[in-house]
Length: 113
Image (cartoon, rainbow, N blue to C red; front, top):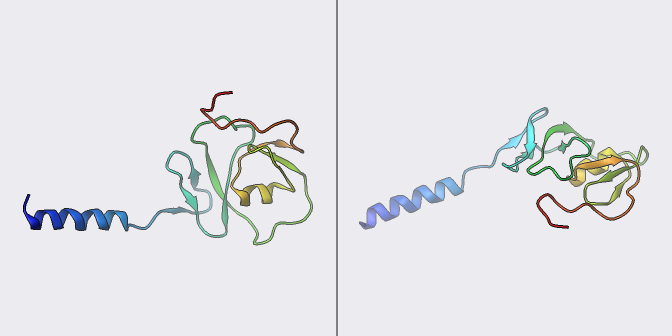
């Protein structure tokens, strides 16, 4: 391989690696197999009860800079209880169910029990 061809291939590889990542806007799909992040000020909202779903995708929604202190508690798929939906979404955790968590955390998708 000629040196010029090698340098060209290297330049292309560096340009591809330096490409900006995509951030989804309000109402757009996030997470999933592509691991799409939401724009600043947004969080990925997931459907409840889908803890064992592989490559779970959600939808970007606006979240306040500071979450309210009250609200209904929610159990995350990580087995932790969050003060409200806002705190759960800011943590990037899919919801398991409304209310406090009981028992142990569910294993991640594909894990063996």
